[in-house]
Amino acid sequence: MKSRLAVGIASALVVMLSVAGMGIVTAKPQAPIVLGLAGAFVNVDSQEYHSAGSNATLVSILGTQLPRSSYNFSYSINASVQGTAVSGGVRFELHVGESANSSSNSNSSVSVEGQAQLVDMVPAVGFPLTDPTNPLACLPSCTSEVPGYFVGVGSVQGNLSGQPVSLQNVLLLVESAYLNPFGGPIFIGTSDGSVSIATTYDSAISQWSGVTSGGVVLDSSGNLVGQFGMTSKLTEDLFGGNETDHGQIALSGFVSPNAVLNSHGEFHGVSMIPTAIAGSDCTSMANAQLNSIQGFSVVLPAGTCSLTSSNSAGSFVLHSLVQGKNVKGDYSIGWSVPAIGFQGTVIARVV
Image 1 (cartoon, helix red, strand yellow):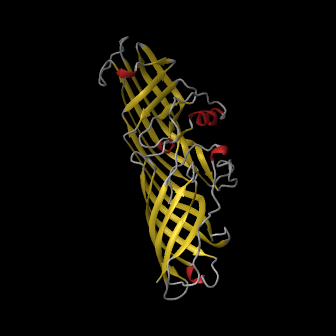
Image 2 (tube, helix red, strand yellow):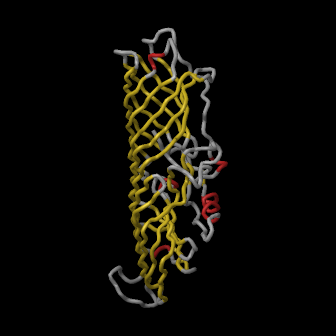
Image 3 (spheres, helix red, strand yellow):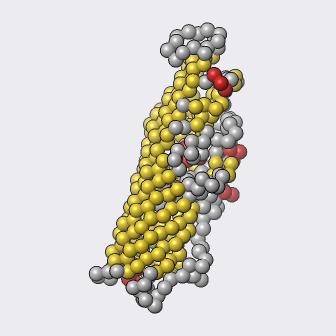
């Protein structure tokens, strides 16, 4: 159960660890049981990202901003993240005036191509969350990170209205679609600002494995009555703003008369980014984060970062440690902005 991750700005993160107005029914274990729960991500083992787009909304190359109506642009990125290690590649093509197949270097044509091998990232969040107010507090010794911007080493070359373009061994930044869902514009450009592109995307699929979350179970007075741990796998469509989740969950720490809730099993669910609530623009915060890195000098195009929340719901079937008993039910949770912490309810029945 997870969703949107946005730029790791200390003031933006609120991990909810208290739930009010949620009770636990103890008199009749066979009756429906309502639990309050709250928690956060702990670790992400592996991530895969595949994204593509064909609609640049702003292009600036070597200080020249090109007229919007003339772009013929496309890009694709395929990235793999294992813990904190990044691999994969990115490629983009830009043509103006002459056709994509033209070799002309006329003063009226623009033909620029860029490619890079991904080697690093600027993280949006790092795990474990050692400070609830700072999602990057574990740096530089995080066990896993979620990219805000992929970093590649490559080249940009071609012709800019008769001027040769030849940038070699440059750092190319590609923004993750997590920072602007529903196809919103993302940033592609060099770390020194010589290339700056804002482009929407037509597809953005991510797959996560070994996603570990944990938290507490509370009664209506906010008292701790148990704990939970989850390991999940998910597939997310950032263009559509939805996700499917499944994995294992374990409940522990319950005492009599609720010891029957000590259990483990599987869950399945879906997550949705609310479309009725506008995201909070975080472009200036992202810009400050990037330019805090030595050697980086970029100006992000307006509207290329948005903080969002998410809602998740699903069902579970758990096997109790009490022989012959199962715990079945449904969950509904809401995620913070950015969506790293969550709180919600579980309605369960012992059968």
